Length: 392
Ligand code: RFL
Ligand code: PHB
Image (cartoon, rainbow, N blue to C red; front, side):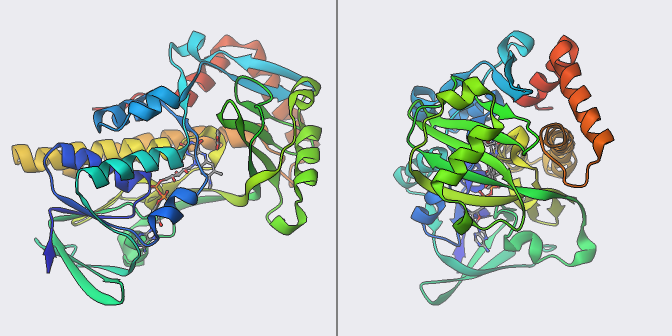
């Protein structure tokens, strides 16, 4: 039987970052990941880091490439009614955000973990958790066809929305709150120049669109699509045509189509599990909650959960105090719910809801109109977008 202090399920950003922070604090940890490292790195997902998330990566000792290659963005652009208008994040809040791909961040964390000689078992199948209410927990899994066991003090469930950590709990152990949306996002990654220096979020009668980027030569663009849409029916040509049709003329003219490097469809969902602790199991990141990507909050919430959890585990081992562990769920959920509220409201502001009537559409227009005419309303958006402060 192998033994560690903290077993981490999942090598996404939450699991890898937690592993790095625990290692810095001298706490032994082992990660079990369902997929191969290459598969984890092949997923194209988030791109925007709040200051607090970037600082946490510095604290974990893996911020060097992010600081060198990440793009600092001091504003975002809103495109609607044929025009583009700027929200001055820096001017309104004194803060900016960093554009740095989630897979680059995972690569940095994986390289660092390897260099430090820490154990990660990739392709760990059939993970199951045992004895969550007892002093010593055991994780069973299969690796290369062999049954294995890992004994530990605590388990961090960082295995995303479809993971086993939450799924293995009895339904009576937690409550979930959920809101589905009647649409998804179709995303394309392509090597072409971004049509603007900043991200462009577009509200249009044909549906939402977003021009994001990974570098000055690589874009990540999204359009709102129907839940029944299939990738096969979206040729590159059709995607770029549809995207342009939803943008203001200046942005549309600056966008040069290029072959897609990756194309995927993601449904949008809001979801929260309460609590985030079950005996010796703690959920962090998408394993405990989901937000629609409109507010760019998912990865940043994973980082703030992990920050609270790493501090609580450090207090446990270093100071022999369980106060942080007792507070974890409540503390993390408070920040989660604020991000849920923001992500939901930005989704509502910018998307086309098929069941909305003329009244709802006029309210949406009035919301945008008010936003662009009120510094107070812009400050509300900006302070949420750059990230609300972390409570101690
Ligand atoms: P992940 O990234 O899903 O990682 C979970 C890991 O657990 C593994 N796993 C298992 N391992 C062992 N046993 C099992 N049974 C397992 N089941 C699963 C998985 O293989 C995986 O490696 O969760 P984590 O670490 O909590 O990270 C969360 C973020 O990935 C997510 O919140 C963001 O990508 C959300 N998101 C965005 N967040 C932002 O902060 N800013 C953004 O700009 C942003 N853009 C986005 C996004 C998500 C998107 N999609 C796909 C909905 C854009 C999109 C399109
Ligand atoms: C991205 O770059 O993938 C991205 C950026 C901002 C969002 C969502 C996704 O709100």
